[in-house]
Amino acid sequence: MKRNILAACFILMALIAAGCGSSSSSSTSSTPVYTVAYVPGTGMNAPVQGKTTFQLMITKQSDGSAATGLTPTVSLLMHMENGMNHATPIDSVKESMATPGAYDCSVYYLMASGPGMGTWEMKVTVAGETTTFNPDVAMAMGTETVKATLYGPDDIVSGMSGTSYNKYYLFRDGMISAAMPSLKLFISHSESSLMEFKSASAGSVMSSPTGTITQMSVEASSDGGTTWISGTDNANGHWSVPGLTGLVSGQSTTILVKMSVNSQDKTTDGKTPSGTNEYASFSVTPQ
Ligand SMILES: [Cu+2]
Image 1 (tube, rainbow, N blue to C red):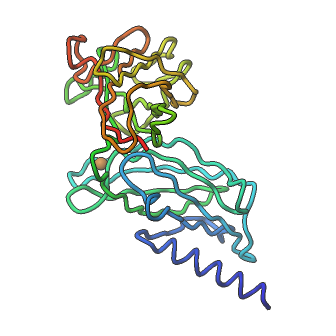
Image 2 (image 1 turned 180 degrees about the vertical axis):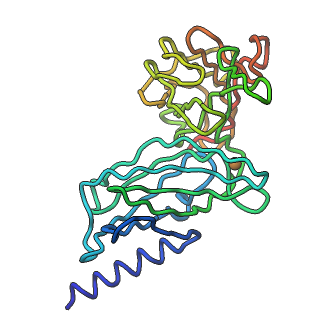
């Protein structure tokens, strides 16, 4: 009896979470086996433009028990009010080590949702069953830079509407501390006019334009470009630049970031490096 009450409470909590700023619907040919609940973070961890983590809670419809050992996939598409659609970089979807039936997701939202902007559509597919949610994503607040773009002639794609670029998006990948000043970035290459993203690290294979990344470097400067420190490729688009100097806890500062891919220096305007187009600027406030 106690167990049933607990299970009922759990389902109710999951339903509340799923109803929080999102709607869900399932599409399956036969009776669904699983219930998927979207559990966004709250407070400091609420969904926001830039890096966002959240959980999916998956239970079995038969008895409401936690569904473990699954490999759910997540896709995100923004329906813009101007009629355009685009995806956003997804880093990982992993089963939680702590909570049975929970799956930890890490994504990088290009844009906030809302009036004048558009709606995010998230499809979660598990064992052939797809559940759709509409996550609310807040605008980034304060002075922190959440993302920047760098690109170059190698990223030109020619389409029906003329020449455009498949740019590299550099996202802040967590906090920076004054005591351990390491700038963390997640770098993703946009493909197919923002309908797809590929994490950018040595060995990554791009599809538009086609090619493998055989050389990539990321450098950062915290002294206005006098000293540049080489970053470390931590694979799957994750980069870190340790040992930045002069950072003070609680004091906003600008960190410049340079990047080259396959020996081409990427710039803020896609043109040949000359002066201030050579680096992206990240306004950061160390902890
Ligand atoms: Cu958008």
